[in-house]
Length: 316
Image (cartoon, rainbow, N blue to C red; front, side, top):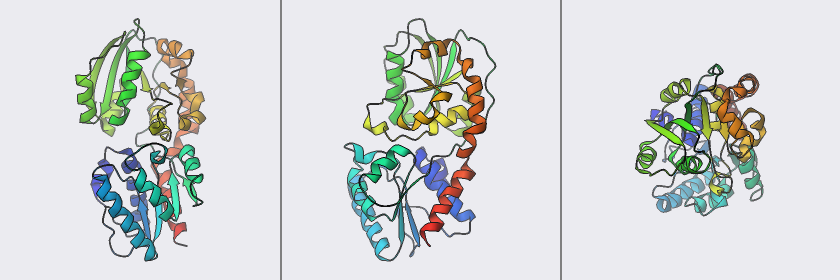
């Protein structure tokens, strides 16, 4: 299995397609990864397609899916983002692909529900796994300079900027660590912030190693979003669960997939958010509970077994 997919900056590939492929290989399956369909497979798992050269690749991928289906191959489609819910460049592909699939997979309830309104195809919910170890919560205290961590793909940077410019007060002093890809980091270097707060930025490339290092020196984690943006409607719970796993008091905008974990995090839009910034350690007991009761179900070995079970069932 190519190592490149383990290091993709797209979580939907790294945490889903790669894990599924590894689980199959570990169980004795012969599997291949890539845009070429090798041989005459029993199962074809379609992961995130990506938007590069999308018109040509949409046509080619759909042809390959139809050819494989006509050869008796079972097609499993992993629907990772809400592409059917807005004018996405990937929308034409998914409109056709969901009708060809024998089974659909979604990372959360929202996307599963959206698919169920369009097709009668069986749908399985398989969440994103975490890829970091469980770290202890921080010792209490009220830091004069709050050390905050933000990590994510470049598509989420606009929500961070919006948060910094609209949710911080003139009395806030923040040391913000940002982990992302180079495109996002350069955009932040160039951006002229209009925040009222005193904010210092430290920018670094995302990696699991850097994420763990940053978490160890941070007081909180910030996961801002936009509840009115259809592109975020189907976002998985992965960044929230990862933040809790890292032992960090976490503030979020309450996306659909976050709602079931609301007791373990702070809503950025709530009145309590200002108090949270003054004393983030007030959430430590909640984090410890989440780490023992919630986090283990998101371990990679647990999620990998779910992928393997689905794939094996699809051939019977």
